[in-house]
Structures are given as C-alpha cells and as structure tokens.
Amino acid sequence: MTNKIPYIHPFLFAVFPVLYRYSFNIEKISFSDTYTSFIIFFLFTAILLLISKFIFRNSQKGGIIVSLFLLLFFSYGYVMDVIYVKWLHCKILPSPSHKYLLSIWFLFFIFGLYFVLKSKSVLINLNKILLFVALILNGFSLFSIGIFESKRKDKYIINEITETNSITPDLQRDIYYIILDGYASSETLKNIYNFDNSSFLKQLENKGFYIANKSFSNYPETFLSLASSLNLNYINDVGKITGYESTDGIIPYKMVRNNQTIKFLKSKGYKYIHYSSRHEATDYNPHATINFSVNFMNTYFIYLTEKTILRAFIDLFEFDLKKSILFTIDGLGKAHKIKGPKFIFAHIVSPHFPYLFGKNGETVSREKTSRDGNCWKQKENYINQLQFVNKKILNLVDEIISNSETLPVIIIQADHGPGSKFEKLSLCQTDSVTNTMLKERMGIINAYFLPEICDANLYDSISPINTFRVIFNSYFNTHLELLEDRCFFSTYEAPYKFVDVTEALKK
Amino acid sequence: MYSEKKITTSGIYFVISFILLFPSDAYAYLDPGTGSYIMQLLIAFVLGGLFAIKLYWKKVKDLILKIFRLIKKNDK
Image (cartoon, rainbow over all chains, first blue to last red; front, side, top):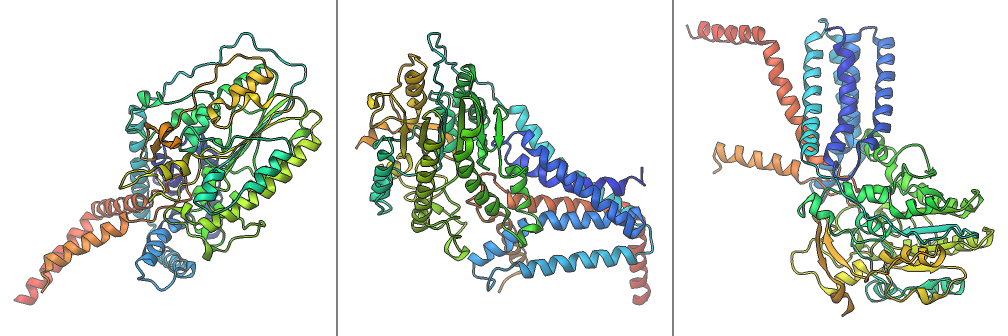
C-alpha cells in the first residue's frame, strides 16, 4: 500500500477543485456537468506522474512533486483573487500583476523541488501526510454534497400540453428562438440609458417583425424566465417543492432542458438544434438532436481552468464566451442547411455583461470594464455591446430569411432586462424596490417574425409565457388558452419568493 | 498601548476578514467560493501538520526531551 500512496494523492489533489466547485454550486449544476473536468484533470495528472517517473526515477519523490505542482496550479486563481483584487481595492498594493504571484509560485515550486530532491530519506511519511491532506480536502466537499443531496427535493410535475386537436401542417416552418440575455425594452433604453433604439426596431419591422412594445418578462432571472417561457406556464409553485427560502435551481434547470416546447415540436417531427450559451442551464441540452458548441469543453471546465495558473496567460472565460457568441450567431445563419423542420434555440449572453464587444465588435480594453459590483451600471459598455448585437442580429435575420426555403418563424426575445438601478447585482436592495427599478429589470425586447399569419394574434404587452401558446395556436391549430400576462419579481437570494409586480409595472 | 491579547485578537480578525472578504465574481454564474476554498486548504494543512506530529511523535518527543535536558544542564 505504501508504494501506491504517491500515485493516489496527486489524483485526489486534481479532483478536489472539481468536487469543491461542484459542492459550492450544487444548486445550479448537475453532477454530469463535471464529467469532462474529471476526465481531463485525471488524464493531466496521469501524464504528470508518467513524466515525473521518467525524470526522477523515484515514485515517492515524483508523487510529492506532482502534488505540489497540482496544488500550486489549481490554487493560483483563488489566491490571486484574494490577494490582488481585494488588496487593490484597499489600495495596499500599488498595482495588480500576475508577475508577482507567478514569481512567488515559481519560488515555492523550486524550493519544494530542491527539498524533495536533496532529501536523503525516502519521504514515505511526507507522502502519507499529503494523502491525509488530500483525503481531508475531498472529504469536506463530499460531506457537503451528501448533506445537500439528503435534503434535496426536486420532484416536480410539469403540466403537459394536452392538445388532442393539434395538426401537423404540410408546410413545417423552422422555428428560431433567439434569447438575447439582458436586452432592455426601448423605454428602458431611452429613459435610463439615454439611447434611442428605434432605428433597430424600425428595421426589424421593415423586415416583417412585430415588436411587442410593452412587453415585460414574467420573471427577473434567466433560469426562471426560460423555464417558464419554454414550458408555456408560470412556475410559481416550484417554491412549494424546494421551499420558498431555497436557492436550489435544479427544478427550473431541468425544466429548461426538458421542456414542453421541445416535446411538442418533436411530436410533430421537428429536430431540436441547440446552440451552447456557455452559461447556466442552456450550456448543453441532452434532449437536443444536435448540440452545437464552439469547442468540446463545457462551461464548468472553463470556469475551473479560470482559477488555475493558466489565467496568468489568458482570460479563458472571456476568450471562450466571445468566441462562443460569434460562433452561435454565425451558426444560426447556417442552420437552414440542416434538413427537415427544426426548432433552433440559442441563448446569447449579450448584451448582458461581460462587455466583450465595442459598438463595432472591437475588443473592449480591460481598463474600461470592471468585474466587480453591479456591472449593469457600466452603461456605456452596455450600450456599445447592444449596438454590436443589433448589427449582428439584423445581418442574421437577413441571412435566415433569404436562405430558408420556407419562411421561418423567428422570435427575438430577452429573458429579463438589465438592473443598473439596483444597488447589487443580486437585485437585493436595502431600501424598497421602485417602479423604475422593476421596469428596467422586467422590460424586454420581444420581437416576432410570424409569416403568413395575422399580427392580430399578437399584442403589445405579450409576455414570454404566451409566446409558444400563440405560435402553436397559429401554426399547429392548437387551442391553448392565452394566460394573463403577469410579472413576478424575486431576488437571487430568494428566487422563489415571488412578488406580483404586474400592476406596479403598469404605472 | 496595545496588549499582547489585543494584537492577537486583531490579527485573527484580520486573517478572517482577509479570507472572507473575497471579491464577488460578477461574471460568474458559478460561485468560485474563493474564501471557503482557501479556508479549506488552510484547515486541511493544519490537520496535516497535526498528523505529521503524530507520525513523528517519537522524534518530536525525543527532541523536546533533549532540549529540556540541555536547558537543565546549562542551569546547573
């Protein structure tokens, strides 16, 4: 057993960050999201052990060196965050730089290497100590996962669409559902951001779009809003299952992935094409016919690597997200090539921060953006990114309409609006939430391209809850009753404690 | 004048606030849990240190006894 210890603790140190991050975010992700990271870090450690065996020709010493390397590799981003970002705010350090921490990390490693290589003993006990530490670390996470899972309540029955009179039309149009995360209503843009978006909306109208000018989202957060719109129903009773104080998002996340819209359209012979958002529940969909993603790495893996030493050399998160947004918009324009009727879903994390694009798509310098606090307050960056999105969307719409054999259905909608008037990003407020704040957060863009049906099916204040009710009634002859458009506000800290703000938004 | 106890207490407060007041990563929908990560590492290594003392207890004990003997010898 003693001979195997040097091969065990490096693997435990490699899986710790994966397990830890999962245990910390268990309310938002499923365990399957961690598989890629486990495999990659496992292989990474195996390669390091092979190299160390080849170089040092001593498994006991090799194991210690690999564990030291992994500890430094994985903890770099965390230490950087604590020391530099916080100290920078306190003005203790002159300027943040990777070179200081990299130098310290390098010295740590060289010192450890020197100690291990110079030691005349076999270092069996040091291996035992490292194994003990690794077991403790993983034990913390496993304990916390176990406690959470034992208490978790995630059984929720979704109201199925029971529509027996629906038809499968001869002419099956592709349906594009494009979510522009955090895209504000024109009223918000005008009143709060001092930006006139009428030119963009007018151009959409000229292309045949109907703009619902008084549309508000039904919920203020992405996972709630999409769970509701894709399932054609309100989700206020989720709190009954999870508990109203809970922040566990697993039920809405499941509802986003396995939703009624997909089920209904699949029953009509549609393929479901999913574009990865690199974000939340829309990163990947196991129920999709095809999942398109900018690369094989899932978001969870990107988030993990962002805390490693690699971050000193490249901002993987921003790099990946930027590439992904462009990949999605580009891909949507080519999706018509996929044979057969399709439901194409793309959740684009823009104009939502991070602010990656200037108004012409140029890179935004780091000095102009901040990662801290309520990023909605960076109004200029928001408007610039929104203008870039506008340009891309207009080109995309042209591409889709001109290349599709049959005119498709296109929905361009936001999941919620921005939140610059809130003190905190979490929508928590020390004083009361005002109508202006609510209007900003709930006011959204909501545009429909519905070929060959009368706009009479649509109305100015249609909210996402009725989007697919209108589309299914219009194109599949369903008789789904339109629900009253109501808006429910809640905060990140208590997402299921809903307050009906419909009347407040009318004022 | 600060007493030793006061300095120790403020030191502890500093360490705790240093760890807990980690930056909020506004971009991330996955909370990095920075403070807790560092705290867990620290606890695991402190426990690892205790485990090391247990492993080397005989050597540690001998060393302490040796030091005491040396002190006694010098006193005489």
